[in-house]
Length: 528
Image (cartoon, rainbow, N blue to C red; front, side, top):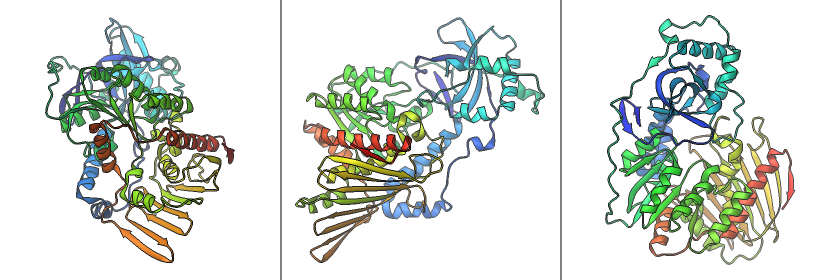
């Protein structure tokens, strides 16, 4: 199908026919006006220049430029999202329908809608009036607009609304809009969609064929710049603009909107490498599908690997098979500062006391981290420092105590303590309060025997031991992303196994799932 972004046409496969959705070939179209507050939710740092200068000085020119470019591109793409009303023909059927719903890429030949928001109609009959009925309903029920705009089939949220209900409850009322804005615009993509035949994939000198699932800003800034010496085979994202733009920038052979469809191409590859950076709840299903198509697929799944205990058990079972390579993407384990601290502490045999204070990004409650199936921001972000604690403390956890000071969400503004069988204590404090200059910033304090190590935002590390102090400084903040991918490629080139232990996977995941569950239930204490 054809999509249009910034007056440029892209050719990309049409939406995948998912259960519970209808795909319409767009014939008539209109963007539904939104209140100004619906899309303006971002918390910006007061001085963009100061922020850019900080990142240039402390993360280097390359990563800073990647972030600037990613921010610019993704702001433009985010601005495309609209709530739309569409009249069209059901794909591969001789039936016509109207539909409403949010669209990340509204200028597309085919659009997908939840079945509840689709209504079969007579061809061309009273379509403009039906659009006016929807506008009248939304004018009376303004609280429904934001709910509709934020809806995603991946969210795990109940839609609780149907187009049939809207049509039944709508009424005639005056609308303060020009007459031309109360009629649908005819859309004609005929002649634009001439998909050129895809060439058969040709080998280059590179050994591995890269598939990347998830083309968000993280992939743009932290994955693709560091995965070198591979053939760019397939990029996948449910947003056709993201898939198209990323595919064009890096020269991927294929860009697709469906992992179900795109991963079938793994069968044509001898040495496929799959990196997964999608919605957290979808990680495991993508792993399972990939291995069912080509068991030789080498996989790295970004954190958090799973979002519930059933997924955890299935992932552990898959990783127990020696034929499978499934690496877990906790990048901080690969940071040079963390590796140095690990070496210094290697001869410590007494309990640890570790405290991590984390300044998180400010996120609106509409952000997908808050979807019920994503497992809270503890699952989505605090898992990094939970895993770091498990990396240092090689013992079994015994109990959790946790509190939240947030008035918005039970698992925000968190302080929690985890005790271990040897008397070790891991304390985590996560807050989005405070200065935003550095983005996510962290202070880590590790104590064992006569050693105290403090890591200040991965820019310096102070080691106090035997009455002496030594300070290790770094020019650039390095949280381990580049080394994680360098080590990944090194392992698969040398035919070595994934290095992240199943034991750590079980403990780290159990901890972040348990803390999330504890706080969501408004509890404070849990024995493990």
